[in-house]
Amino acid sequence: MKRAITAIGLLLFLSGQISAQEKQLWVMDEVVVSDSRLKNYAEGHKLTRLSDSTISRGGSFLTSLLAFNSNLYFKENGFGMVSSPAFRGTSASHTAVVWNGININSPLNGQVDFNTINPFSYSSVDIRSGGGSVQFGTGAIGGSIHLNNELRFEEHFENRMMMGLGSFDTKLANYSQNFGNQKWSHSFGINYWESDNDYKYVKTGERNSNGDFQNVSLNFNSGYVLSDKNVIRLYHQSFSGDRNLSGNLVAPARSRYKDNHYRTQLEWMSFGKKATSKLKLAHLFEGFTYYENKDSDTFSEGGVTTLLARYAYDIELSDFFRVYTFLQYDNYQGSGSSFGSPQRNDISFTALLKHTLSEDLVYNFGFRRDFSSDFSSPSVFSLDGEYRVGEHYGLQLSASKNFRMPTFNDLYWKPGGNGDLVPESSYQIDVGQHLELGAASFKVNGYYIATKDMIRWLPNSSGIWAPSNIDQVRIYGLEGEFALSYPIQNEQNLVVRSNYAYTVSENQATDEQLMYVPYHRANASIAYNLSSFGIFYRHLYNGPVSITGGKLKGYQVADLGVTYALKGKGKLHYSLGITLNNLFNAYYENVALRPMPNRNIQTQLTLNF
Image 1 (cartoon, rainbow, N blue to C red):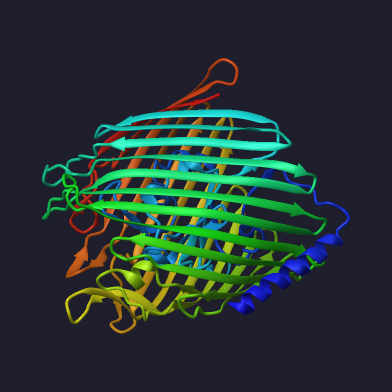
Image 2: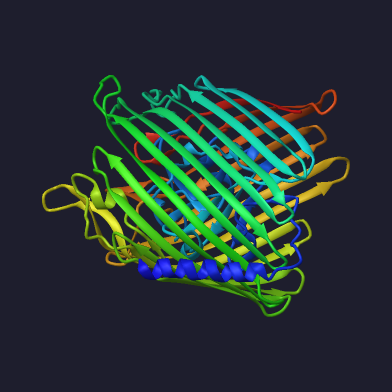
C-alpha cells in the first residue's frame, strides 16, 4: 500500500509539471462523454454502439435490448425477475457494467441485475467484447457494457414524454428533458414501470403467480464550463424496485425482494494543448430487503457503500505516441444479516500506451496493478491493435490477462463463505476482421479464453453450499455481426442488424459444456420507415443449454411492431407504437421450470416537444 501511495504522489507531481508547460488550449467538443477510453484506446477490440433509435425499440429493460441486439445470453428467472448475462461463455460476474466510466458491478455478488436498468436513461449503450480488466477492473473477462450519458454544450431545449399500456395490467411512463448552451448542459429523466405480470403459461394455461413488480428510476446529469480549459460534470442515478419473486412449475412462491441503488459521481476535467487531466469522485450505494414470506414481518437485509476517487492523465507525447494513466482508490463498506460488516480498501494503477505507426497501423499496450487490503491481486496486461487494409477492410488483434476478485458474498456469507479464496485469473486472445461497404458493415471475431481458479459454489462435506477456487475453464468461439442502415428515396429508410455466436465453454476436468451456455445463438432485426410510418420485426434463437440432470430445449421468439408519427404545432411531434411480443405464441423457458410470457401486446405514445 505504501508503494501505491508513493506512486499516486509521483503521478500527481509529474502531471502538474506537464500541465504547467501547456500554452495553447485544447478546444472542447460540443458533445462531451465521460469515458474517452472507448474511443481512443480500443482499436483492437470489437465495439458495438446501440443508438437512440435502437434503444427506443428495445423495451424497458436492458435485458430485452441486449438480447435482441447483441451476442449476450441472458438467464432470466421469469419476466421482470433477476436477469444475469453470459458474455462469450463466461458467468454473470465476468461481465463488467460501466456507468459513465466507472465499474458498477455489485461488491456483494459481482453482478448487475439487467432488469434493474432502464435503457431510456442513457444516450447510448456500448458493447465492448473481450477482456478489459486493465481499463475497467474486476470482472471484465467476457466483455463490458457501457452506459453513457452525453452532455451537449450547444444551444438546445428538448422534452420527451412517453406513456405505455400493455398486457398483464402493465403501465409505464417516462419523461426526459435536455437543455443547455455553450456554457452549461443539463439532462433529467424519470421512469416508472409496474405490472401484475400474471401471464399464462402456453402449455398449461396456469398463470405466473407472485410475479408482480414495480420500479422507479431517476437520472440527473449536468455540466458547466468553468473556463475555456475547465469543465465540471455531475452524474446521478437512483433506482427503487419492489417485486415479488415468481415461483416455478413445481414450487409456488411467496417471497418478495426490494432493492435500492443510488449512484453519484462528480468529475472535473482540465484541457491543455496536448493533455487532459480528470479527477473523478463517486459514491455508490446498493441495498436489499428479502422476505421469504411476503406476508411476514421477518426479513433479511444487506447493503454496501462504495467510495471512489480517481485521477487520470491523458497526453499526446508526439504524433506517434499517446499515454493514458490513472490511479484509483476504492473503499467498500458492507453490512448485512448474512455477511456481517466487511470492509475493503483497494488501490489500482493503470497505464496505457498508444503507438500510431502509420495511418493504417496502430496498437495499444496496457498494464494494471491492484493493491487490496484483503488479498494479493494479480498484475494484468493487455495488447491490442488494428491494421487497416485499404479504405474498407481492417484486421484486429487483442490479447490480455484479466481477473475477478472474490466478492463479499464469496468471502463472508454465513454459512459457507470462504476467506481463503484467491482472485480468478484469465488469459485470452481475440482475432477479428471488419468490412465496411457503403451502408453495410460486417464483423467476424474468433477468440480463446483460459480461466483458472474460477470460483464455484458447491455443497461441501457438511452439505453446506460454499465457494472454492476449483474450476479451470476453456472457452473458444466465433462471432459474426452484420449491420445495414440504408436510406431509400422518398423518405424511406431500411435498418437491418443480425448477430450470430458459436460458443464452447468447457470445464477442463470434465470436458463438459458449462450450464446455461448455448453452443449456438442468433438474432436478427429489420426496421423499415416510410415517411411517418414505421414497422420492425426482430427474431431471437437460443440453442439448447445444459442444466442439472439434463438439457433445456432451445427456443425461438419473435416480436413485431409498428409506429406512426405525426407533426403537431411548433416543435411538437407525436409517435404511436404498438408491439406484439412473442408473436408466434411460443412456449419457452429461459431458466428451467420458469416459463416466459405468452403472446402479449404493448402500446406506447411518445411526445417530443
